Amino acid sequence: MSDMGEIAPGEKVQLIAYADRFGGSLAGLHEILDGPLGGLFAGVHVLPFFTPFDGADAGFDPMDHTEVDPRLGSWDDVRAIAGDYALMVDLIVNHVSADSAQFRDVLARGDDSPYAGMFLTMSDVYPGGASETELVGIYRPRLGLPFTALTLGQRRRLVWTTFTSAQIDLNLFDPAGRAYLDRVLVALAAGGVSMVRLDAVGYAIKTAGTSSFMTTATLGLIDELTARARKLGMQVLVEIHAHFERQIAIGSAVDRVYDFALAPLLLHALYTADAAPLRRWLAVRPTNAVTVLDTHDGIGVIDVGPDQMGDGRAGLLTPAQVDALVEAIHERSGGQSRQATGWAASNVDVYQVNCTYYDALGRDDMAYLLARAVQLFTPGIPQIYYVGLLAGHNDMDLVARSGVGRDINRHVYAPDEIARDLARPVVAALVALIRFRNAHPGFAGHCEVGGDGSRVSLTWTAAGGQSTELDADLATGRATLVWTGPDGEAHTCHDLLEIHHGY
Image (tube, rainbow, N blue to C red):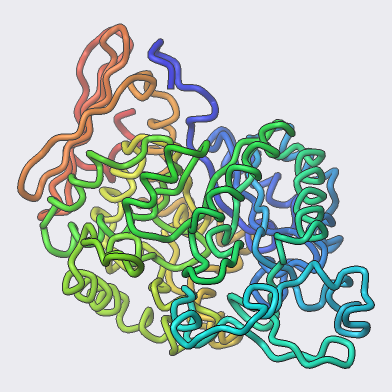
């Protein structure tokens, strides 16, 4: 941010949404941004709209990453959104769909296919075979080894599949794999994208004798992709779920990094009245972060726990605290999150809890608004997930139909639902907080973290004396908001549910 009293557009609040689930199409999402949400968001992260948007992993398994699924619209619709909003789009770095034309050709023709080198097999990484120690040392967000036995042409191979057998890993040591990613970057730039989110990049480079997750070679790939994206006029956001010290290190090398630790630390503080881990993180976290409390994935807990690789460094929370956090989410959600998490549901990560953030707080309006206020006061670009914007409930019907645990927080909204939820007091107050965050000149300055015991305070001060402070008591779930007006007069709000009356 500048320190001249005006918030840069790129620092204002952004929305995260699926076009098919929040508008029904790209044009429909654009209409919602311009209509019911008019003036609320400066940018939007549109989750994958590629062909197919409704595959095995809700668009994160593209058959063709350079084409817009025609059921959602066209690149013209993407460019139209980019003309009005800062647009973030995913570059799915690690894999493509098993139904992609390139992989289907490899299935049919094996080594005779021109795309044979594009996809990774076990022997590409371990040409002489791998020891038991090497194989169990591979880091994977699922149980078991990251291989699927498939017949490529006439030859049985172990194909690398980090996530599911429907998602085939790219061989990024092969020119065809790198050329594929470059084609996608060029397509995104032509579509008006201003920031690229590197999805699953931590798993993208596999190296024998390592965990094949966030290695030196991975960091080299991130540097290469960042340089290429910048040359095309786009910034880069790196998506990594890892130990908090790795997040700090990554943040120093890229444009933006996610603050995934904020969400579980706020829950821990609100559950236990222990704000010390949250204050510790706020004091050391990278400020070039994108802050989130919820996304299309679950609520991460690995980001605050001890290091699961290397020397097992302590986390922001102890293992016992992480376990208690997970159980508390299950309890406050009435057991719904337990039904949708881990091995109780398919296609999920064991290090994430699937639940809406509102239900993780037991649908407590004051606690929810306090958490959102802390997010909005934390330095970085705040992104609000579409379900979280509307304080959405767990969609157990959708989970039952799809069998996918993460669908608990991926509700499909009809227009009348959006209108109804925007009128709820908790949502109206959140909308007012977002407008406050976008408009108050204090956020163009610098932030100081304070507090003790169960309290956290975040104070922003800009040139000219404009300031605003949030004092949050995690024991009571209540917060006080103080700000200066245009003439320097002080204003105070003791009830965040009433913020829309005071600002």
